[in-house]
Length: 78
Image 1 (cartoon, rainbow, N blue to C red):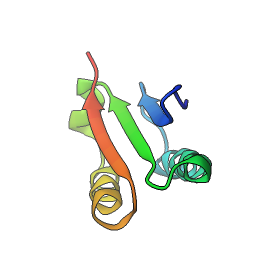
Image 2 (cartoon, one colour):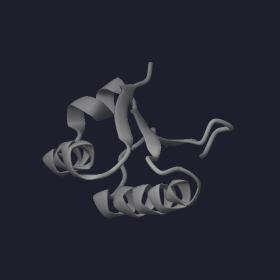
Image 3 (cartoon, helix red, strand yellow):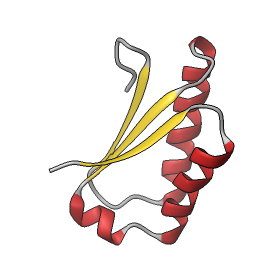
Image 4 (spheres, rainbow, N blue to C red):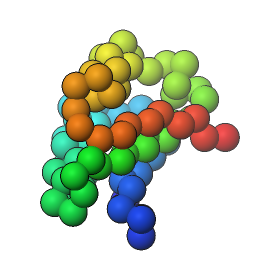
């Protein structure tokens, strides 16, 4: 979802395949890049999923922060 301020939101409420997350992230990033020089994406996960997140997902989020133009956040939802 993209809000009225141009921020992208990805909410993960159950376990999903890592490849699916990558595809959603890529598509959202490219869509935001059309209208913003530095896209802002927030990924929301539940506390239980956060503790179960694979190392791949954590490494991917670290990569996006370090290597991609934009602002990327991980938010834990209650």
